Amino acid sequence: MNRKAEFFSYVIPSVFAFALSGVYAIVDGFFIGNSIGDVGLAAINIAYPVTALLQALGTGIGMGGAVQYSIHRGKSQNGNPQDYFNTTILLLFSICLLTMVLLTLTIQPILSAFGARGELLSMGQEYLRIIVLGAVFQIFSTGFVPLIRNMGSSIVAMYAMIGGFLTNILFDYLLVWVFPYGLAGAAAATIIGQGVTMAVCVCYFIKVRTGFSLPDLSVVRTAAINILRIAISPFGLTFSPNIILILMNKFAMIYGGEDAVACYAAIAYITMIIVLLLQGVGDGCQPLISRYYGQKEFAEVRETKRLAYVTAGLIAIICMILLFAVRYDAAALFGASNTVQREVAGILPYFIAGFLFLAFVRVTTSGFYATEKNNFAYILVYAEPVMLFLFLLIVPRFWGITGIWACAPLSQIITAVIALAAKKMESRISACKL
Image (cartoon, rainbow, N blue to C red; front, side, top):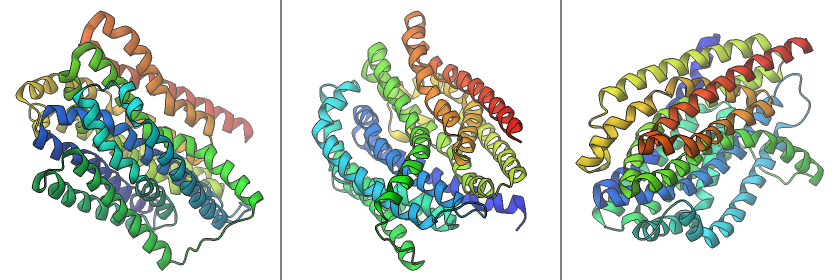
């Protein structure tokens, strides 16, 4: 298989899987928005970051284990890849127990901190009680997928996500529209869908006889440290859009009230798929970058990154054109009122403006953690929410609610500049080592 064919054999299933996960995320919004209206859409948008936290924890640990698994399969690496698989399973199980206990005790204060009050607060609690009960399915399903992808079965990983996606749609239809269980029904549909993804992954592990055994404590300690060092980056990469969601919801509530939150909810759902498509490019090329890095084939690492930048850039440009063309009708998909639809049409171009910068940052960050350049990855992962927070503290004071929307592309532009500087610095350091 030539280089480009191998690249796209990894990236296309990954992009498709992440596109599905993006649609997966907006399915609840579609059914709730069309069933309950603006208030339901606002409630699920405020509650969603907790769901995203569970998925990000699974993705971070799963990706950390997957990267180490790939690197230790390289010709020049010592160590047993199976130790990293076993330790990843232990970490996923541990984080399941911890989050279920902590979140069960803190649902109300978390939602209040996000800006929910009154009806939004009660509806958000209704949604999250079910989500937290099913944390095991969320964490294990998102943790297993990158492991399967790095074992060379990206198609199976894609099928696992397709199965969960279709199941989620079916049960959203049944539990929200046919049987009016509202937000609790939407949450249950999400859990059932993630359970199907997890089941497909478990069947794959059984079929290929991956096996699981408890490693020695010293092995677990070393492997866990290596996994968690990397996990911080993909966790942040997955969750940072939701830190942004939390910040935007909070400031939208302050400057515009529930109508502004409902407006941003529609925009967040619309743009979420594009963000995940770009992450799909980065995560799709990661197994190849990690493998070449482990084998010290640095020319192949550079070429894989180049292909990733071109692919992500093209996806960003196509999405910018399409979203701008449908901006007047986009919010109608979620049952938004005519007022919200008009507001979204005027606001969406602010968010579209940042897609190319976001594409560059996503691929650069994935390249860093795939090659164990963890410090650079940490900086890029958390730069955007930090920049956004600083802009939100200043710009809306002079520009009101419009200033909140303008903060999104401003933070992405500054983060892209930081990414470019980090990339040049890493190249100079690598050249000095050679």
